[in-house]
Length: 606
Image (cartoon, rainbow, N blue to C red; front, side, top):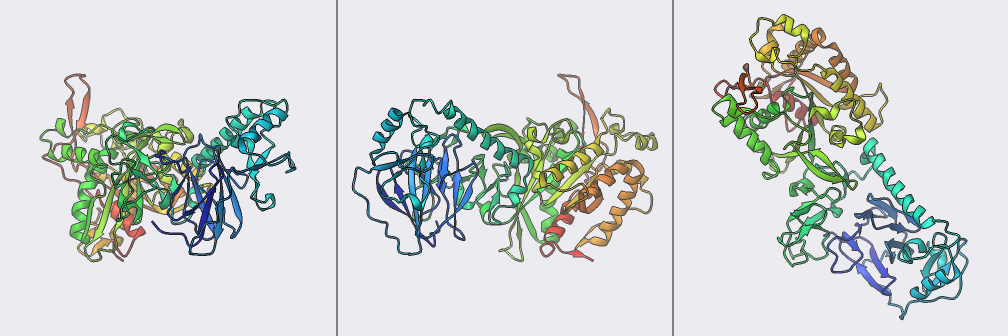
């Protein structure tokens, strides 16, 4: 772990001992039996020290400032003392420019404390901490306005410790309190609620963080590398938050010579976890840049089939055309996708290739804790892009397949955190299914595709409008402002409708020299004209959202699916014929978006 450029010393006020901080994160309190400390000191950066607050049921107070549940920073002043209160544990932090750490001498014990009133006036002679508690109770002092400090530290140099938390276990209520202990509890509940609201309604707070911070691929909250949790390897250590089936998440205090964390049983731990939701983080996630691609669309628009086909075609096309390998970053986390691919591409009949639609509580989702509440969030499917020409230029891709219900106007944003990833995405893939459109069905009334006869609600322009509304709400953009990120509007099932294109035919977009930008633009204009004929509101909403919009014609199957009946329920389903699978332009929208993000790695013809 990296060392600080400053010498940092910590004084344990209860034990009366100084110690030197040399490794980060530095957990507080320091009891050896605690596997997960409620607070961690992070490595100083630019004269500030980060403090991560992991357990919101334990109060944090720094220099008299009560902290919220999110990691925050405090300015370090050289040669000055800083007070840190973690629950009822009191510490003094001192910073020095001397790079050869030597802590101050420990004072004589027992340590004595001064008690202060509301105006910092002295309330009697110094006494041991237990005697101060007795004095507060005997004198009926209010815990809310009194504070205390070891008498070896001058009051004028920093804020003393609030007695409301220092003596949290003192079971009495003064006449002047008037129920203030309960108000104290309510005040911090209100602070936590405010922090939650900020991050739910204003993810711009994420972008105000240090640029070196990472965004968790599961809960989309920011964290610094020094706050990452380790995952215990020993089978007897289970996590109290995630349940008995999950290994313990903890903040390490011991390391192997190779730098691996060591759990409480002495076993090295190689897994990493998000400090917020505790989900597993791929190790490469901390080392290379990652780009989020959000797949959005209405229910039954074909998102799951599209993503399944896309993941297979990207492996082939990227390596063949660009000499870039596309592989799983975490094969275990991508297991659900592997099962879908095996079902689709190895099935022998339509019944065997059938994929269930993405559901809010389906296998494409996982339940995690976010702000202390268990919520359903879409699984991240992460991949590594490795260039054969430049092995040092690896990039990560993370895909999300959202249930269409997440973007329904009747589901409030605060009740639907699973849609928040669109605000931090590098590109958005909007899947549009034109087959429910009544005007198009009239033009194709002689077509035998069963999708043109299915009873499917046609509210897809509403999904696009709601996505625009939510993204601008999260990023706090005005209605006329646009995001500057690629938005690919993918008009699916083009094997059915491409005969209705208003002018000449679609052109091939992928050549041996890279993407053909002219062909992509040509095709985009054709598809836009098609949408202007049948769904102009979709075009209006897309171009009001992003300054980088392209329209694509694609088909996950390349043919009309077959109907089959479930023998148990008699329900009729549609699935592709495995002998006729011939996807059309499925990977082109992703390649175009990658070119916008990283043009050197993904070249294109002018």
